[in-house]
Every structure is written in C-alpha cells, then in structure tokens.
Image (cartoon, rainbow, N blue to C red; front, side, top):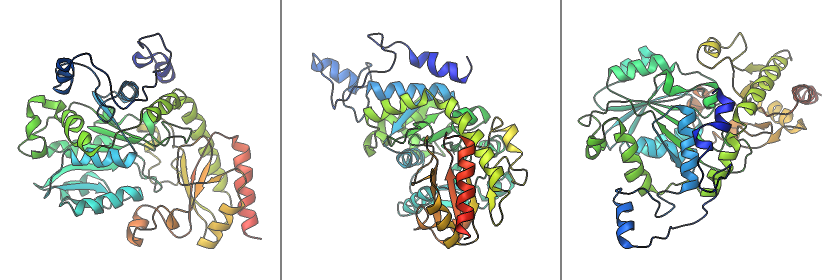
Length: 410
C-alpha cells in the first residue's frame, strides 16, 4: 500500500472490538478487573491489559500503533507534548555526567531543555553544523546520544541522516531525530539509519490545532551496550528493545507525561488526512516562497529555492518536498511587525502544522529567553518572520503577503 491507502486501510485501522472504523475513546482513569490475581499479572507485565491511563490506555495504544506503522518502527510511546517526548527519550539513555551532541539550529524550547538538563549533570555539546567531520571531533567516552532535527525550525537546515547515523554508530552511539517538521510523509528517518524518531504531534500529525501531544518511535535495531549506556543496564536482557522497555516501564511511566486519551483520538483522526494535507501545504509553501523571493527587500529561506544551501536534500532525502515552513527577513523588526500586522489570512499564532497559515516573529516570542548567538545559529534574527503555510488557495496567500509587504512600505 502507498501512504494514503495505508493510513485508511493499514493494520491499525482495523480490528476494533465492535467493528468501529475509528478507535473508541476510552476516556477513563482506571480499568475494572474481576480478581486481584488478574490485576497483579497486568502490573507484572505477565498479561496484556490496562490498569491506569497514565501507564496505558487502548485509545492511546491505537494511536501509538498507527505512528509506529507509519514510521516503520518497533515500538512507539505517546507523551503529553513534544517537549515531554524529547525529555523522556533523552533521560532514558542519559545519566548525570553524560553528554549529548546536538545541532545548534534547534527549536527554542529544545535549547531551553538542554540548559535545564545541565542542572541534572547532563551536558550538551552544540555542533555548529551536524556534519560527519564536526561530530567525530566532538565524540568522547561521555557521549551517549546524537540529537538533531531532520528539518530545523526555522533555520531549515536538513540533517543528513544516513551520514550522521554512520558516524554515531561507529562510536556505539544512537541517533535521535526530531522529525516534527518533516512528518513520515516527507521522510522516514528510521529507514535512513536513525534509531529513534520524535514528533510533536501537536503540529502536522494533528493538523487541526486542537490538541497537544508528542510521540517517541523506537526503530528497535540499535545494539545497546549497557557498559556504555549504564542507564539501560537493568534492561540488558531486552536487547535492541532495551530503550523502549526502559522508556515505557520506567522513565516515561514515572515522569507521568502521558498523552490524554481524547488528544490521542483527535490526532488519530488528524493523521487520516496527513498525506493530502502535506502535499497541499508543501505545494503552497513552494509557490509562496518563490513569489516572496521576487519582492524587494525580502530575503526568503525555503528549501526548494535554488539558493538554499540544503536544496540538494529535497530530492535525495525529502521525497521531493520542501516542507511547510518558510521564513524571510524583512530588513528590520519594525518592518517585520508591519508586514505581520497587515496580513488578512495568516493567523498570528505560536504553532506550526495547522490547516491555517500561521505567522510569528520568533525573536520576540519563541526565542525570547535565548541569547543572540543561539538565536542566529537557529536562523532567527530581529527581522525574521516565520510562516507555517496552510491549505488555503495559494493565489490568495501570495496576494495577501504581497499586499502586506507593499503596505508596510507605505
């Protein structure tokens, strides 16, 4: 089956107890058992079942199975948010004294998380560029994971997953990839060599802007050396699934960052149209980027532009698409604000991946607690405008942005 057919007719769209075409919503806290012996077996993982929705719920499990299927993984775990997913995934493999190598052009919230991890004794080394040469020079005996965004937001740097996986694996280190901006429609990092994929499901997977969530997908192929990754020592007997088992039964369960059942249901519905939405969004973003590039005083950043330094990855890693995010520099913060305020269709909001086109000035919002150097490495300047392109008619979006730029200069 191809992508859209698999969404509607794959394994995870079938098999509900009463013949439902969607997973039923189990909006409950706990589950009834007829005997204490049965419940004991569930808690001891000797019998399949659900006990408490913080540690397992059938609606959430249906969504986890869907994302696992789409990404080609061995297991998936849903979290309360994208940041919760990143936090749980990293804490599952890192202890105090360990190091993370990460790309510099990351989402502001992720940069903030890495600073918080410093207080727990987990140090992050930021690579100006996640290239093989750079990362090799940074790896040492303390390094436990390499972390990068497949398409960084809003810098739009593309991670060469195959190259980076090879470098990490040579050193016995897993590669974790945040693929929120790409989605499995544009790229499947596990098939390119990544070991773990993370999504903020609040974005493109959901699509409707109606629920917060995150998901971690384990490829289940990395050969964990528990002498090196001591955080997984107790789970050695699970072999390549040690990460997933520790994550679900230990760090994730204890942190309590579970997804709400109704959010899982809403996002499951959202993924039904993921392929259709991404195709339209990428088409619109491409057209808008090329139109903006023709305007005076506007410097556009989008992957399908010939001038973009990562343009080559569009065909060889991103399935021919440039994604749904573009940014442009307006020349000054004042002009950026005027353009944003003049838009009729784009909604001023701090999210991406919505059906609607969203626009924001990241320097004064998403990166307000980030220093100037970190901002610029992330592709954010005082005059940067970030656009998350929606599914509106492209001609209307082009006209709207063109008029807004003209009105800002009057």
